[in-house]
Length: 190
Image (cartoon, rainbow, N blue to C red; front, side, top):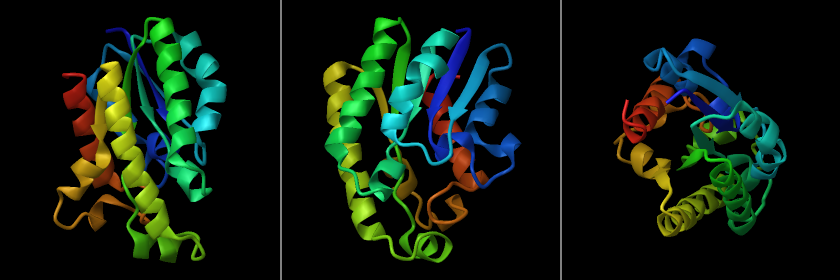
């Protein structure tokens, strides 16, 4: 493997932690001889990811693309069907360009932390319901398409008290980024 592109939103970018502590940077450290590119953009949606997929992913000609998005779609009150359509577009474009896609579903928010740190008018219960539904839909889609998939809700929900995995209820802390890195490293077998 020569290169990996990680495309996503602020969870991929590493918002809220030192850049050296993001899961993508941890992956770079582990894979010293692999070019790992962070194509995370704060605030991005899955349609934004689709719009920049050719430039940020295909033009870099990676062996693997890791796709993580959807949280901002649901914060903007979009539905999971449109988000799935966008993931499908990226997966198909990856496959057409001989890039192996790995899809991750976003973790749910910690509602009270998000209310205090972000938009107090947002219905995080609804957002979490959409995130959970999206994880289920993505799981079925990836299974049908024989695409590697990890539902991060399954990973984060296994932790008895997972508040320490977040900085603000939405974004991951250093511990959360480390957990996400371990999940990704396990999927790509490094």
